[in-house]
Length: 213
Image (cartoon, rainbow, N blue to C red; front, top):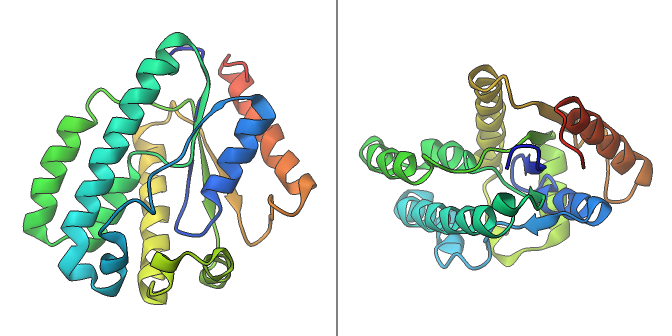
């Protein structure tokens, strides 16, 4: 897949990952990979009782994302077809560290490392972040039934986890650029100029790496 754009969009719940990934897909005619969310049968129970349903929820997400990325690699990236995804596989670790107990996390990490050993790596990561107020407003606006009981404290902690994880990722993978954008300052759904700013920076980053969008 060297030279083939593979872009991932990441950030906490409600930040607009899917909206941005879709916009990039439409702009460049890239294949769009969307994570499975509503199909997770444990998610609603998870938001009601995180401790009780965290392991089942995280294992469902891990197995489905593993299958999705394997399919994308086989049918697109290996054939030099560009892809933009609304998640990076590392998000599994961000959520698992927050929700699983020590014993569960150790088992989970072993499985994660086996499954992700040969996963395709993105050329660029777009990282979106925002304040808690902005995240809560956007979650309420999109009105997903399974998200109605999300704890603001959980969401705030998750945002901090994301920030730490992205800083660590940049240290561990200096070869993969991370483009950061604030959802408090930009509204790429309603404002075309904000979207164009992101598109321009993405295009410049890909060209710098000799990857043509």
